[in-house]
Length: 268
Image 1 (tube, rainbow, N blue to C red):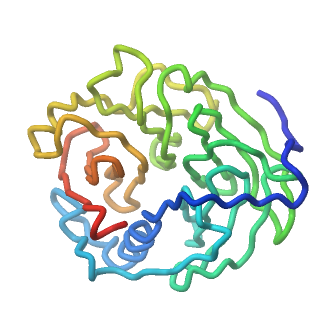
Image 2 (cartoon, rainbow, N blue to C red; image 1 turned 90 degrees about the vertical axis):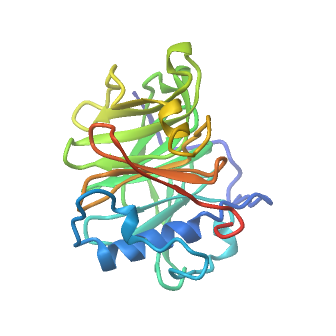
C-alpha cells in the first residue's frame, strides 16, 4: 500500500480528448428509474421493469469537462458522483440537469490513470484503474484536493478491469473482468471481489459463468463487461457490455436471470 498526495501532471491541466463515454445517458435512466420502480420486488428479473426503448427515460447533457466520463455512483443519501477517464477528478452532478454541483481532485494535481469505475461505501470513495489499482479517499469540499491511498492487489495480472460496484450485503467491492489474462479465466464471465475490511483480493471469483451459457441466451460467444451495479432492492448484479451492446442480470449466486440487447443506435 502506498500513500500518494501528488502526481506528475501539469498544474491546471484538464485534458479532454475526442473519445466520449456516452453510456452515461443510459446510466442516468437506470438511476432515475430505480427511484421510481426500485421498491417493487419482482419474482425473477428486475430488468422486466425497465423500458429500454430509445424514447424512454431522461437525458441530461453534461458539460465539456465530462466528455470522458467513465463512471457513476451514488452515496447512501442519494447524491450522484461521476469521474473522468484519465484524471483523478470527481464531480457531484444534478441527475436531472447534468449540472456540476461541485468537483474535487483526488491528489494535489489530480492523480493520473486509466480510471474505469467509481464506487461509494458509506463515507469511503473508491476508484479503480484498468490495471486493477484501487484508490481509496474521502469526499472533498468544492475545488479541494484530497489525499488517497493506492492498493496494489495484483488484479492487473488477472484481467483488464472495467467497472466497480459495492455489494453492501457482502461488504465487498465487485470488479468484472473485461479481458482475462489468465488461461483459466478465458471463456468465462468472471466477477472478482475485494472485501472492504481487508482490501485484499478474494482468491475465489465471486462469479464465474461459462460464456456458452450467455450464448445460449442469444448474446453471442463473447461478453466484455464495461459496467457493473448491484440493484438496491433485489441485490441482483447487472452487467453491461458496451462492445457486445448487451446486458445481463445475475442472481447473487451467479444464476442468469435475464439478458437484454442494448443497441448502440438507441443508446449511443
